[in-house]
Length: 160
Image 1 (tube, rainbow, N blue to C red):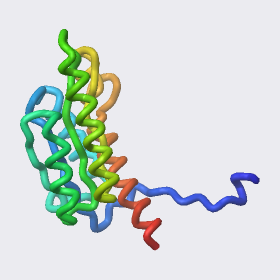
Image 2: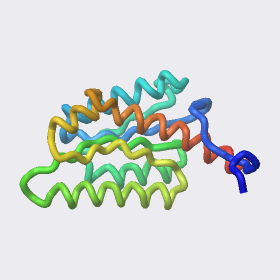
Image 3: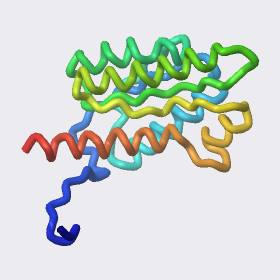
Image 4: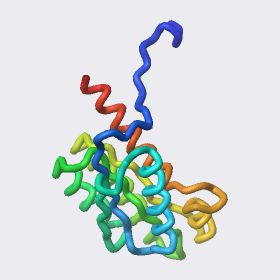
């Protein structure tokens, strides 16, 4: 079997008629705010207007999944972008929050069939977090926005 003769279906960065919810944690706001700005910029550059976007603030990364679930199940949104930052400290707190946030968001996507883009940084240091929030490692909020757009496109193609 060769790939040249196989039908390939993939999403596009086409953002026509999409509604996007961004769930942004307030904790570690110095990291999350640049992630949010990056996500909004990427959405706007790909044709998503401000009127098509709703931002919901939550206290921290642990609270993102329950709000993402509520938004996804409302059927008002084509995708949810989760934005937060969990930075390792001296206690096992990081492991619980990061793991539960990731697992919860995966469950939301599977239960709702609404794409949930994971823009929650899980880093060892503040420097790593700032590097990924618009620093030398790019902006993972923008990456999550592009993932959301592509997944909406892909799921729409699969429905047809």
